[in-house]
Length: 388
Image 1 (cartoon, one colour):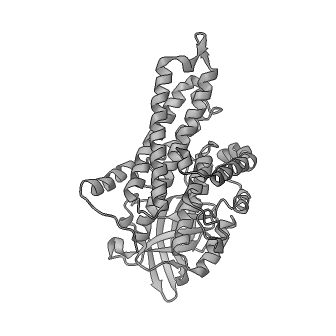
Image 2 (image 1 turned 180 degrees about the vertical axis):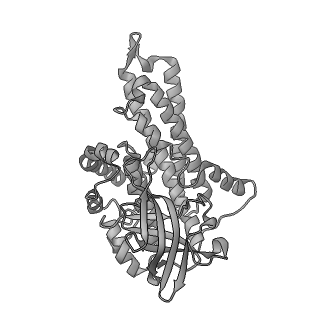
């Protein structure tokens, strides 16, 4: 089936990425997990290899490649057992840089996008708020126009790369009385006067920095407005399709990694004179889990193929995240059980995998919110159309 989606060039890219991760990242994972801080020197190394420019045009130092290179990038990041490190990398490229690729003008792209491709600037996306969660339209952060600047006040939370990053793609209300029609997008320097970050202490994703950001009369040049004023809600909704598909791909990849590890362990672990992969209850359970993973994986690949053709896959991407993240949690929970007592030991990968995986049904829109979005599409026949 993979031959339908991946060419020889894709496969060579996968091998080069695997080699790079084993050489430059894996030796440092334990240190970064322990400290909760990724050494900034790794970012330019990713940039030098072109890994941050997969979706960026060559004019801005990118590679302009198809979406299956993104699939490979995401899958291999999940297989080094640090959801936090993976999140820092993909949040930079597929949250922050997505808006720069789509909305930024030439001047903004030279100032922010090109350095992001090269790994010289790290980006984050500021949408979620302490009182809003998944309700984007209820955001309270404001950007008031005064002359040639906007004055930003408010707060954001659950912001990956928000502590150590260099810029924020920020959503703020430019018309407080217009509801979702009064939101605009800005690029804001992380270390601008009035911007402060508090690091959040998370259950999983320990290597990544996740922040609560506060904005106190922050002056943002009007030239840092992204796209059209008051059109931000539409931009966010479109970007959600990619974000949710990214999280669906991440989920099937970490589930596959867990199954591969568990199968290897079970083939070597003996009980009552035989390897535990020969016990019917365990082998049949593993087959069920593998089948669930493969169904999600193939659905995700088919959805990527549709997105690559320009189809607005809001329904499919939402299903991808909803079903794949639930599947990954179940797979990893059971794979931990296959390891018995060793599954509960930090020296083995399953404990971290389970903590990291648990964010899947929460981040990027909770499963409960996704079900309501799907209900509007399926039950209420609501149509979500791509912006022209």
